[in-house]
Each structure stands twice: as C-alpha cells, then as structure tokens.
Length: 78
Image (cartoon, rainbow, N blue to C red; front, side, top):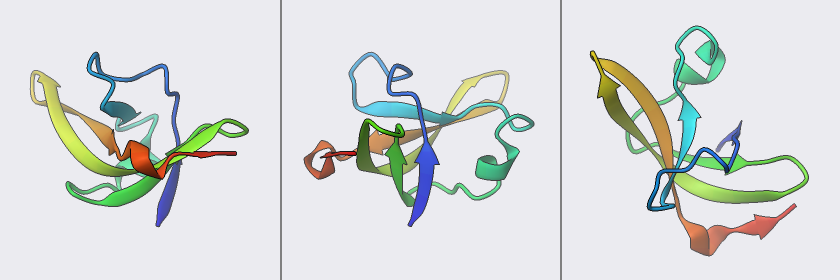
C-alpha cells in the first residue's frame, strides 16, 4: 500500500478528507501514482497515520486536487 506524507492541517472543512497532491509539477512523484478509489496510508511522520481512499476533486479551471478520504477507525499513533 502506498504511503504518502501529508499535512493534517490541510483538511476539508468537514474533516473527512486530507489534501494529498495539488500541483502536478511539485507533487509529480505522487501525482502519477494516484487513481480514484485507490487505498493508501496517509501520515505525518512522528505523529499519526490512517488509511484513506483517494478522491480527485476539480477545484477550478479543470485543475484537479487529490484528497484522501480518511478512514478514522484505522488511526494509529506513530
């Protein structure tokens, strides 16, 4: 399962999704591996990790940001 470092401060307002990748150039290594419905582990080093399902969300002008829909029941402290 792909492990992706995220910043849990970049969550949607409802707290269900965490931003995984938004810039195809900056996040190219991750961006190329993502697909809708893909299961991953998102984590902050020395903090927490949680399983998530990847979802693309169009933000504007056809740009897509990738989010991880967290499955909070899988949360573990690192």
